[in-house]
Length: 283
Ligand SMILES: Nc1ncnc2c1ncn2[C@@H]1O[C@H](COP(=O)(O)OP(=O)(O)OP(=O)(O)O)[C@@H](O)[C@H]1O
Image (cartoon, rainbow, N blue to C red):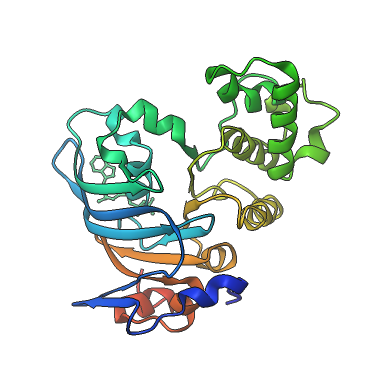
């Protein structure tokens, strides 16, 4: 496995002083600025199913954190707590906090529609709007009241460049987004999310519907966002987690078992259950 180690990852190397072992769980306390921190989060669906059980998780500012674990362990549920997606359904309950820094605001206590303006999300399947490429990227900006054409043009171009799509679409910005390939549509959805400068960008298995070439392009793009955007990604693909993320969290049955920098987690897991999962003995 070819884990990428960024230069400043050395800050996060685990020591007895910045790591905490609780029963059979192990958390790194990163020695780096945080953008968000999940504190003792619990979550119940409307039918009473508890899908998240007392999770603590830091999100280091402008770094990529991946959530891994077997099917049904709660990865997508945790991700969707960040943008209060669950609140679209009746009867859901949260306890604990997802604190956003530097404002130190608890996302669980804010108006969900405000949270969704601040936290961006990209889904498994590309879901462009039935609009032009340009209008897809500009949509969120217009909702936020930006009407100045020059400003819109600049942000659309920058966002498409950040999403590594500009060169492929600059001559056809006013064509339908559906004229793009699946992989291009997914990068367009990432550009759309980036245009409004999300405080955290959530990626829910963003390459699961893509072929290997399109997947590689999206992974390159995530890599290029390193140092620019705070990203939380759910992936079933451990090689992908190792390639794109700086920090990884292994979940099992709604709990967070181990959080560490990705290289450490994949090469020297601290918990037996993590080791069993990453070596394929389980899951
Ligand atoms: N709408 C829902 N209502 C009730 N329970 C749900 C709902 N959605 C998910 N669950 C349950 O919550 C738990 C966590 O599901 P979740 O989809 O978050 O897991 P996951 O790790 O993302 O799984 P996968 O890798 O298969 O996508 C599971 O037990 C699942 O059955």
